[in-house]
Structure formats: structure tokens, C-alpha cells
Length: 70
Image (cartoon, rainbow, N blue to C red; front, side):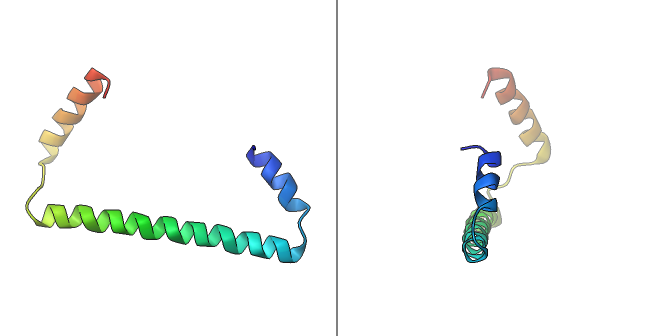
């Protein structure tokens, strides 16, 4: 289903249904934010444990992988 179709269907909802839909979408956003923060926390702990990469090494590895199609 396209975004346009979703918008068209949302426009036909009652006020209560739109409220419930908005609450559902907000909950999805909150869950995504929680997952993002958990990922960042895990990565920061790895870095705090000393597993860091200097920017020049990162850039060269990134360029190498791009050239290989990875």
C-alpha cells in the first residue's frame, strides 16, 4: 500500500480512529527511539572498552570496502 493510499484511508477515519492511529504511530516512534538508544549504548560500551578505530583507518577501510562493492 502506498503512502497516498494510507493518507486517503486515514482521511476517512473518525476522530476517535484518527486519535488511536496517532497514538499507535507515536508508540512506534517511541519503540524505534528506544531501540536506537540501546544500539548507541552498546556501541559506546564497546568503544569505552578500548575497541576504537582512528578516523584515518576507518576512512581507508571504508574506501577499500566500497571499491570491493561491500
